[in-house]
Amino acid sequence: MADKLPNDLFLPEEKKAWFNHDRFGMFIHWGIYALAARHEWVKSREEIDDAGYQKYFDHFDPDLYDPREWARRAREAGMKYVVLTARHHDGFCLWDSKVTDYKATRTAYGRDLLKPFVEAFRAEGLKIGFYYSLPDWHHPDFTIDMYHPLRNRENVAELNAGRDMKRYAQYLRDQVTELLTGYGQIDIIWFDFSYPGRTYKGLPGKGAADWESLELLKLVRRLAPDIIVNNRLDIETEVPDVLTPEQYTPRTPPTINGRPVTWEMCQTFSGSWGYYRDEDTWKSPEQLLQILIDGVSLGGNLLMNVGPTGRGTFDQRAIDALEAYAGWMKLHSRAIYGAGRSDFEAPDGCRLTQRGNRLYLHIYNWPNRFVHLDGLAGRVRYAQLLHDASEVKWIGASDDPHFVPPVGETTLTLDLPVKKPDVIVPVVELFLKDA
Ligand code: GLC
Image (tube, rainbow, N blue to C red; front, side):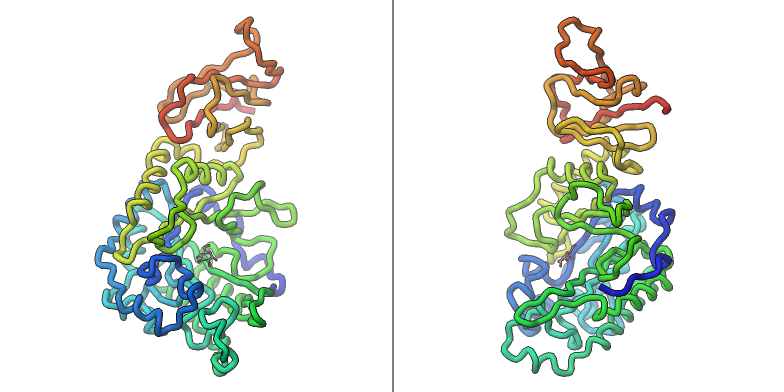
């Protein structure tokens, strides 16, 4: 880890207010690995050298690329910001970078992919983020390390002679400068990733000293003072802009030294981030929604990933997943935007989110008629199902001599319809009395 940094290199809470409010973003992993269609790490996993990987560059021609359609689908799904891989670990750049030829404008497609992307997503009202890889398996100065495609070559030492990580760190700064000065205001920069302390066959990982993270961060702050920077630069701080748990839901809200921090989980529809044709592990609509709701109920955001195809399209499975979000968010977004953790305790099989004096009960397991809310007796003014604004009544022990559950003085018992409403996760909206 690098030295501890002054807190003023990170954003004060008020500059992250939009992010904490918006809760839901779209991650997009797109590059020439979409042609291999078997994971964005294919070059490393299959130990493909530059010559072997060249066919994906040579055949990259996303003729159906229409970022306006991507942006529309993101907005309809309820996503409020987007983070696109401007460059992933294979080093291929979606923009017309001045410091490399390994870029979209030199492919058969021949055009910059980033400008129209930014314009389209801005036009739909989304905030803009760039993912930028710290490793680069194509750059001639990037030393062969534990994840590099050439890691198992006999002559690694020889191949590493002449590679210069100092020059590479300057390349990172040059490219980040292009990204933060050429596309208007960028709201998020998502660096990925650091792996110091790991080794493979004596080959080291990489971290802050390799990326020159402190200088990189200072540069970012100078060029874009309000930008949110994620926490993968290998820089130790008590106040990161945002923590980024990946592919799991934390059990409790993440904290640093006992203090709550802004956080965002990133997740996939099916496991890999880049387009993977044969992957058969797509999450169900219930799972997709529960990931979002679980995160918000713990006070966090969700960055949900789409891996577009080599033609530049979202495939049907991705469209279906986005539509599951769209259908639900259309009716339930006010249980998500501006909402977060509640101090009340959720009953079994449910989650709570809260925004001011509105409490949202997300019911994963539809109960047989009653749901019991401890601590809420006498605290609620009105309750309704959120999707159709139909009243939900509650009952007390005295209302019915046959009423069995010993609910206790402080428990509010909602009387729900026997049949589960026809939405993926039904939500009861409870209007709390002023404290
Ligand atoms: C990982 C992977 C990567 C993906 C990222 C998203 O660090 O290297 O392929 O882009 O996580 O969080």
